[in-house]
Length: 301
Ligand code: BG6
Image (cartoon, rainbow, N blue to C red):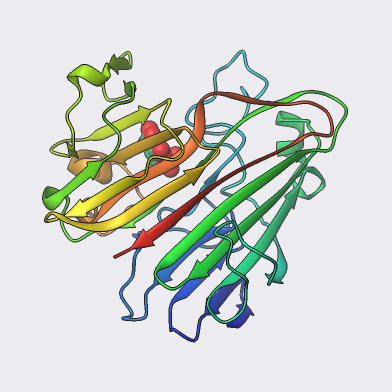
């Protein structure tokens, strides 16, 4: 596999011609293309790619808090979705060790590692969340697959509580032709009502189709159960997870897209759906010195 590093971007190309591009601001995957050249992720054409704002599209990494922080929690002073998606990460290099899928690195796949530690954070962020940590984010590109994994180590002397999530903006042809399978047996928090309301598994529709602004957090999912996104009854994406029992489904719809300055084209919401595996409905608690890992594999058809 060929790996090019230029202007804050790391791009890997497999002999099969699958590619992935990661922007060091947020270690955000901004593009994933298959051998056919077809893009798999939605990236807003107005996304800021210079670190001035979290990147609107691709796969932002959410850490150490999801959504608006709860004021009385240790993450309470942080911005929405935490800091990992907007700070500069370090490229640790191409890795050929065994990946989570068990295959050896080499010509069929390439694993790129990115690092972020507390010492690399801007002083202002360190003050808002004064914990010592080390993150290694791994992006593995295979033929028709993209795998992301986050390894979190508590390098300090006190307990750390965090949430983590992969904010996948999946590119689709038309939101009206999409159905999402594998979620409905789990309880779900509907965030489009005020206050947010629970939808019980018995009253939730399988499969999920989207007909209006959607912002849901499904919890207690079995990590072994895949989630599929079907387009006109054909599987477009198959997501499997490790260590992640929650999954958010989000689409801002027309009005939401209009309200976001960095969302372009304005009708782009029709070509995207966010399906976001994570650990967000509670807190992951890490004792001093302990480590945690969560991951996903997205298979495109
Ligand atoms: C989703 C949340 O994950 O991200 C939504 O569930 C939120 O509530 C969306 O609106 C986008 O967030 P942001 O901070 O990138 O605008």
